[in-house]
Every structure is written in C-alpha cells, then in structure tokens.
Length: 469
Image (cartoon, rainbow, N blue to C red):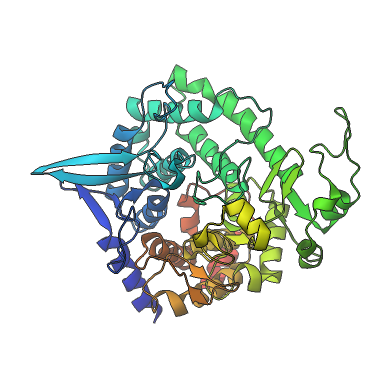
C-alpha cells in the first residue's frame, strides 16, 4: 500500500515540473483543475524548497541547479530608495514562465501581486537552504563559488544584516511575509523567521568562499550573530512549566540592565488555556516575543525548524518532542501537522486576522493542519530519538492524503476535514510526504539536508537504522 502511495506522490511532484527554454526550472504550487489557478500555477521559492529536497535525496539535482540559476537572474540587484521597488538582494517570492508567441519570458513576483502586497522575508533564506542542500548532495562547491553566486549570497546577507533601529539579534518582520502569508498577529519577531534566519546564516557560513577576501569578511559577523541569536531565543523564547511559574511571579516596570523581566511582560497576559495544557514534562519555543508581549501560541514549523537547525538546544529539542508526544491529539491530530495552536477565535480572531474568512478558527494558518510539515517532523524525530512519533504521523497521513488527492491543508481541531479552500494536488504536500519516507528508509540522508544541525541525541543514527531494519 505504501509503495502505491509513494508512486502517486512522485506523480504529483513530477507532473508539477515547469520548464523554461527546454530545461526544468521548478514546480508549480498546485494543479487543481477544479479551482481557479490564481497564483498556484507559479513556482514559489518556499514551496520549491521542499520539492528540491525530495529531488536531491532521490539523486536528481538538475532541476535544483536550474532553479538556482533561474532565480539568481531574477534577484533584485539594484540599491533602491523607492519604497515601491524590491530592495537590493531580495529573492522573488515566486516566478512564472509566460509565452509571447514563440518566446518565453520569466515574470517574477516580489510581493507586488501577493495578497496585501507584502514582500517575502523568507525567500532569500529558502534560496540559501536550497543552495546548501544542492552542494551537500552533489559536492559541487564550484557552483557555489562562482562569482555571481557568491555575490548573491552577500546581497542576501546585506539585506538581513543591515543596520536597524532595534537592538535585538532577532529579525523584525511584518505580518504575511513568510509561510503565514495572511494577517495572523505575527508581526514583530515571529519564531518561524528566527529559525529560518538562523538556518540560513549557518548555510551561508558554509557556502561563502574563504579564499575570496570580500566573502571572508562576513564570517566573524555571522559567527557572532549566530551565537547571539541562539542565546536570545533559547533564553527568552523558551517556555516550560518552570519558566511559566517565573513569568507568573514577574514584577513589572523594572529598570536597568539587572532587571529580571527584561521585556516587561505582565503576568496577567498568560492565557487561561496554557495553565492546564502545558504538561509537567516538555516545553516549546513561544511564537513571538517583543516589548510587553509574549505570543504563547505554538507554531509547528518554527519549533521543528529550530530543533533541526540547532537553534533550540539539545535539551530543548527533547522537551519539544516530549510536548508533541504528550499533546499529539492537539498538535498532530489525524492528519499532521498543526501549524498553529490554539486557533484565534471570537474577538481575538476578528482583531488579529482582520476578520479573514480563510483564517477562521481551526482553518488554514489559524489552527489548520499542513501535511508539508511531515518532512520536518520526521527529520527532528530521527535526530532526537523519537522515530515512533514520525512513523505514527506518517501512517495517519497515508490514510488520507492519497484518498483526498493530496490537499494543501486540513481543517478542524484535529484535522478531520479537508481544507474548505484547500487546493488538491498540492505539490509540497506530496514532496513533504516523500521526504519523510526517504528519511525513514535511510536515516543517513538526513545529513544531506541543509537544516540538519550538528547536535543530535547520542546514537540517534544507529538507533534509527535499527528501528527501520
């Protein structure tokens, strides 16, 4: 049965391939013939990253290299003072191949055509991770060391390391600028972006050519930023029962560098749902942190990516997996994996989402379930010695994904309903499933993925192999 589903997933992925001048250059987001394509017929950088990992693990790097070269040509190369033009170094959120008679053209979207016209913060990060995965799997460092590729890396770094008004090592971003592409109250310093930022900086450190004097000057800056970012997130974003008790007893209006409540968090902001929901053992990284604010919501991609990339400590990774196991009904459900928990409802939903009907409670990004996250759940489960959790999630997904024609997301508190506006034949749903299968079949493949951290549970690989065999 699984072999049949895997074949179906490859058919979804391979049929989504887009060509330009006779060469494969990416995969469209979805191929649902029953709904209007809108922008789902474009090649999204964040979506293709998952397709790229699946192709690379399967030994097919050509399409990935072509994608990297194509987007390299589309990267914004001019310094702009005009607020209506993409900033220097910005990678497109997506691109589309159009035809004018017999000629093909590439049309890039830097956010001008997106919902609410928000520029993508994560596209450059995903591009770096795709490049890093390509180099890891092919050993083609010569490609990464080409002058134009090195310049593209430096432009991305300049864009995200530029001088700013705030004084935190985290990155300040607006709502709707990454996978959560609609208003969800995640403006500020959302965990998802901090985890992607950390993973991308690690990738850049490995990709920069030390023999190039210009690139070499970035290394100490990256090393220091990675250290500061890891300390900041591990210290201030972390939440377990012990930490919750500290916040509950916080004093406020503390002044000076010796203050304990450094962000002036008021204990009354602790939500009622959290007090009984947080288990005795286990914890997670909160969704957002800023002056006077903790967003206590769980965000699946941010937590798992933080674990995989090493932003979370090894102990924190273990605690996050304990939380997933203890609250599997809420966070994994019948079809993995919930992007956000709990869902915004009632007046909070109206205010923070702008009454967005697609993001109603337990749907889409507001508590919906996203099969694409299977790849991250499996990767972290293998790294942390919780393979049974990934196997359970994969079996749950297999019962539904094939039958439902590979939908984009699922609705409901436990993911029992297919998303009301979900596209079928969603490419990254199939790709996320394929990566999970590839990793469980051969856990050594995990080392090829660009987000794989150096710290892992002792003996994780030998344990994973024994479990598979």
